[in-house]
Image (tube, rainbow, N blue to C red; front, side):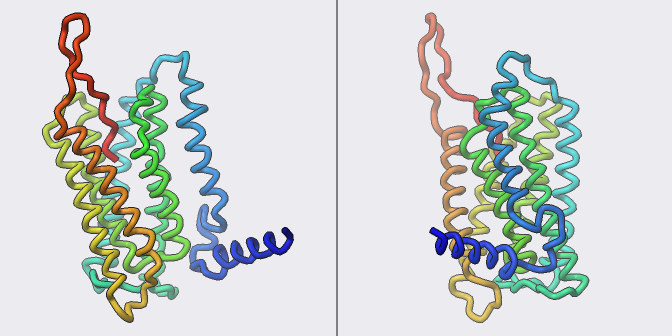
Length: 280
């Protein structure tokens, strides 16, 4: 047992100190994984247990104004990330084929790493989406797809800062942030009580396109030689994006393509369809 504990400690020390990017060790929430894991753990506890229990005998909170402010903040933050990714990297000398991480203390490299850290912070802020669902008593929208996506993005973004703060992987942040600009603009518009916007299904299509582009982007790591960027992220991101493609495609089919079943209640025909969850 003592040998096992010692081996686990050595492995943890290697992952958290030796393999990590030393530039980010003093940044907020980056010294060790425990604060981030605690946030994710409390998030899951709140949305599945504590929140529903607190709201059981309460009326839903009216958060219309808060949500509008939140959506504006998200649009600004995501727009900033898109600008930084294009300005610092993808409209500059970054290669779409394969781009190594610059681990130097060059001011531009540090600025890119800082932008990856801001992306991680934004993914933490994204968790409020689910909290707002619970406080508005829309527990049916706390779907597996929604929670899996948000939790995975927080954990993945933390790992991006810790080990890969720059290079090939930042294409994910560019595409995802662009999608979020569109998505939160949609939420902002619909918060003004516009019912059944015609463009909603196209946002899901955009998200599916996002996963397809990322599949191609990370697959390039498998056949590009002497790139300088590690290939192990491909083992994570390729299955992850395939899984997300399947989940979103299933959501799209059930929401926009599948014909709803009809049931008779008190002689009146009604659609037996669940309210679709928020597309994110």
